[in-house]
Image (cartoon, rainbow, N blue to C red; front, side):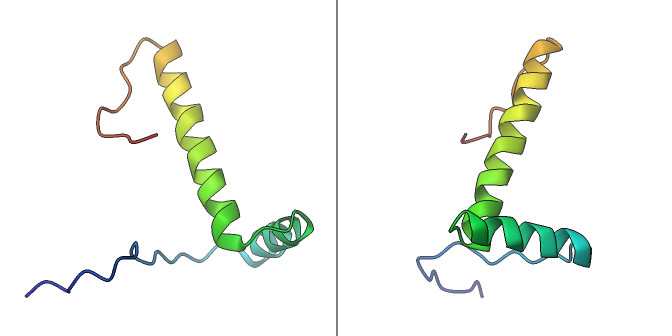
Length: 67
């Protein structure tokens, strides 16, 4: 049986190297942003960058992308 909908997106976890996490957290705090908000922004930026790179190389963007 599937888990009932909670109205929230699923939690994603990962383990960045400690120095990267320390620097990231410091930058997010300086900017007055939560870690989650800063990571979401970074993910959007990375996806847009990759889509631009594919477009420049003549490849089509992922049709399933929502950004």
